[in-house]
Structures are given as structure tokens and as C-alpha cells.
Length: 75
Image 1 (spheres, rainbow, N blue to C red):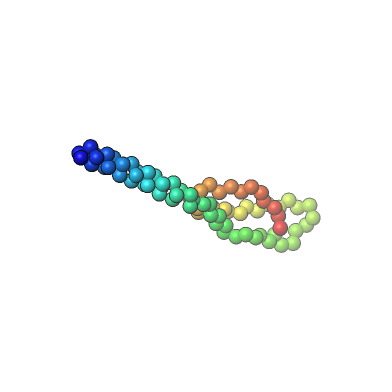
Image 2: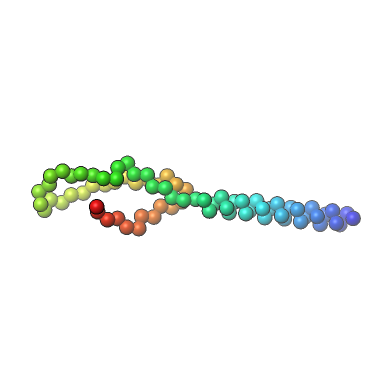
């Protein structure tokens, strides 16, 4: 009877450890990037033809996973 109780205790410990591991994995699957931009547009106003223009947009990842910007196109 003592062996049965020990075996049952070991099985319960294994089950609890596996259950805790599963919860950690499922919590990581909700990780997602989230992009925060101060402004999404910029107006240069009237500009002479041939004038080089540049503008920088500040982008911040406020999410919990890596943010990947795969392409950017002017509007």
C-alpha cells in the first residue's frame, strides 16, 4: 500500500509540472508587437521641383514581441 501511495504522489507531481509548463507556453503565444507612431503624415507644403526632402517618423514597439517593418511606401 505504501508503494501505491508513493507512485500516486509521483504521478500527481508529474501532472502538475506538465500543467504548469503548458500554462507558460500558452502565455507566450499571446505575445504580439504593437506599433505606436507619433504622427502618420507630414506635409512639406510648397516645394520647388528637384528639392530633396527628408522626414523621420518616430516608431516605437509597445508590444511584447519583435516588431518587423517589412515595407514602406509613400502615399
